[in-house]
Length: 166
Image (cartoon, rainbow, N blue to C red):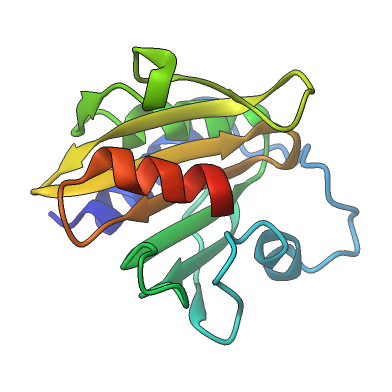
């Protein structure tokens, strides 16, 4: 099973475990695809990514190919969850098949990440899946689960790219 299918299957499972109540941070009138597009990593936009039909419990889904930065990821998936419970369950399910490795200097994976000098922004996991490095993270304030994949197994290089551009 492809990793994207695993991520989308995890999203569906999270929806079943967490209910379908929408408590996201976006306004009721905002297009979920636009809300999610605002969370794309540097080098991605709706011009080089594709909006997909979201699975149950997910308000929007976007898949991307090669990043505009040649040193960037070769694939990415972004999911806007309906609520924080579904997001947390989706993250847990999405990392279950990863061969987890430490994220940078944290010494562990999964761990938390911070934006600027602020508090915890979400969870992040680093690892290898089917011989390629992956970074999977949540942006808790936005109920977004993101996943990027490298063309090789160089987790430290992908993690550095994510820290700069993610």
